[in-house]
Length: 394
Image 1 (cartoon, rainbow, N blue to C red):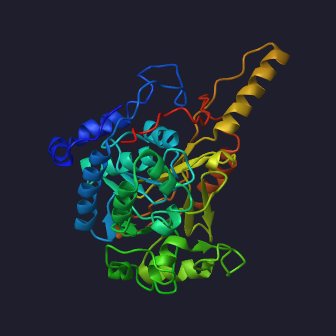
Image 2: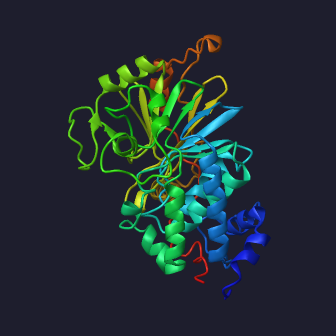
């Protein structure tokens, strides 16, 4: 085991490339037939002192950048929803979409809690933020809050694998995360949703950091609110629910075309609302090991063409594999090879010079019909508690 070391000495030796390398050491070797969820003997060995140094560095970067980000897809931007400590699935996202800096990313929050590997998840995301501060962006979710992650798992994981000082240092960073982003002047991105206090999206710039999440008001709503077709009283008991007319008015008032948010589990990994004025993106497949949902990533290119990449449910993949084997045994023939799980859900830009960003409804209807017929790639990934050994408790 690694003993305690001199913090100042570790800070002097701090190497972000080495940290990233150690966090990625659990990946299967290139061209390996072993799937992502197999057991590996390598430990993710990161000292508490290294974690503290990493958190100090990333906190300074977050405070140096605005609370309301203005991003331009160059050449594209991948937008991810909740990952909730599902580290193996975070690696699946990077394997599918490309590791930074090959792909630019915007994550919409909820990196910790519920999943079994919150520390690896948040450390890799923060490490990439340090390494690529202008290409890798992280918004705050409602679980990046001490009162929430103290209850839903992250506090206990930090206490068990590190110490309380580390958890408090994470809290200091969470209080400095940006809240919203506007992509190409047309897509408003946030973890939760809209607020009665959000008239102009620039109102987000009023939020001062560092800050905890209050019990009500603008910041609370941005992290907690949900769209709803019928009910306007939030089932969560926190914040509000808002309808499609509220979304439409907000978009018209701010010359926007789409609200992109996370915060809710959706079966296909993405789900439209209000005549495609809002989309929910959720990136944690098999959420908590209890749901048979897919995850999804929304990709926006420089022409504002949007597409969705699916991170398939491993439960569905296993079921389809068993069905294929059964059919093979019954029919005596090999099943057809799986097709790609790429979904081209388009928003066609009719005139980019005039910044017009409109949805191609016919194309999206076609895509949604084809989605159910698309076979999922044959990669049997089972959530495995032993995939990543614990970070050394020092």
